[in-house]
Length: 487
Image 1 (tube, helix red, strand yellow):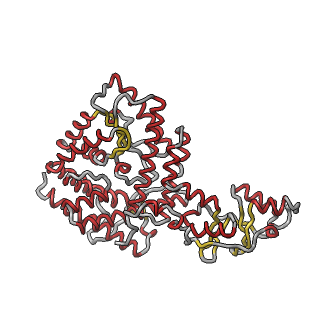
Image 2: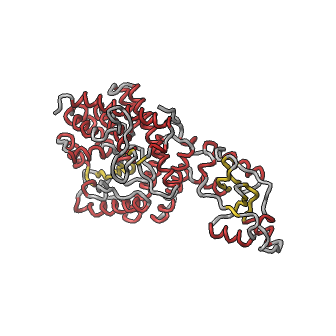
Image 3: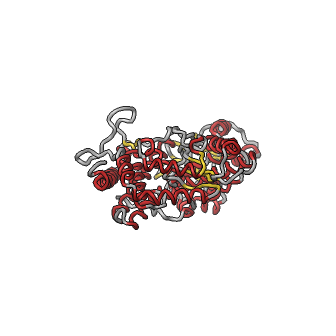
């Protein structure tokens, strides 16, 4: 398996300009003009592209740069004929930075020379332009500052504008080499911040809640493994004093405000309606106890599906003890429920790595995704499912997949070596997924999970095969442990 950035690296270290390459700041192709283009035409080109500068090039050779300031000082203030060639007002003694340089180096260069624009090169080719505004925006998109900005907004429309920056944050983290584990925590923390602020705005509009409640995240957000493009999975655990006639309208309105707000911010409604917006997932603690008891004792296909979502729940806001009480009670029961665990293992084996009988990676053969590998459902989800079974079998409270595996190794549910193999496989597959999605977004396409092996190097393809083999091997171990005699 390849060596990945340490998953427990402090997130603040991944968000500094010193750890961010210049390539992470490039948002568009550079706007270039020929040296003999009239100044007025160059200014019109800048206006049409919405940029504050243009590069002057000839046969891919960089000759100079013209900025808004140059047009003001060297043309308008000097009374120069705007039909003169643009090269006459360009700055030709240029400083450049390489695409792989640290963004911090670019910031120092700008400060030292008192300039605001620096061309970016890849070898001898000009590939972009960064400005002091880009660097300041990079700093303003850090996780801490972005979370602060979220909590300062007073309307859903304002939150929507701030939430639009989360995708850029994720792409910058990926370009900076941040581990997939840390990235999932950062993005999930942004969703938590949005949810908390929406709850505050809802209570400001509806009045204080009539009784204690806990807003709970489930699914990928609950596991702290969310990406910027995700649907929402959430629920409400209400105090047992809840009376539908007296309190039902309030909590329905609260849930609608928050779920609608999250949808407006890019976290679309759950296709399966597993949201607090659905009355089924807005229940008092006693009803939640009964639901989990029923799912464990009668593990039919629907119960198993719900279990996979709601066993990954995590407190976000409100009264924490409501969630902690429920989780403690459920986890005290699951280790002894062997039939339930066997069903969970059987359900987990519905997603298997795409390896043929010779152990070679096999792509999808038919349909719109022919020739690709589904990184999520063929690799990542099986690891999530394995970790969940280990946690339930050991009564482990951790929800994050990596933490579940580490705790399962400590409790003896899995060996330390195999836990580390799964953690490395998860990190590798998730990194491939994030990088693949970043490439798609940069190319103007919608992000998906379907990777073509041709996108990978030979070394990466070997590591992909190894990662799938680790998952398949551990699935086989659990199958023998729980399903050898069937049930």
